[in-house]
Amino acid sequence: MKYLDFSINGRIQNLMVDVFDAISGSKEPQLKINELLETRSIFELMFEIVNATGFYNQDENFNLIKALNIDTDNVDFEDALYATWVTMGNNLNTSKTQEEFNAKFALFVPIILKKMDAINRIAV
Image (cartoon, rainbow, N blue to C red):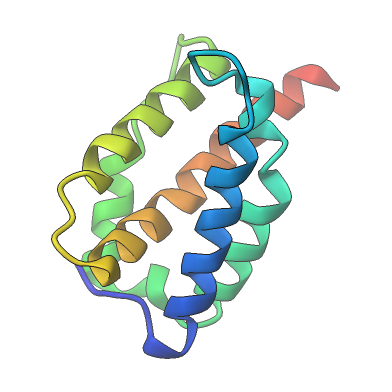
């Protein structure tokens, strides 16, 4: 896995904190899908920033994203988003450095956005 470009690493880290702050305000013991959906604009901004650097086009990262993009055929889209979030959390917990944490989070951004899009298509 390639890490994020140094020029955006801090900015992505701050946006991740915004996501975690937004969902940690819940008084519920378990994350609610609508709470995660409310962070969509943050994920979209992260995607734009990271995508502009070519991070997603690097062969190694592109192959990781394809592997992490859990097949959700015949699965409830909300369950798929939740499963992706849990998988991301498990992967983040194995990070040895902040840079690795940031890069792993960035790898999941397009996957999470794809799951959010699937939910929004149904809601419309």
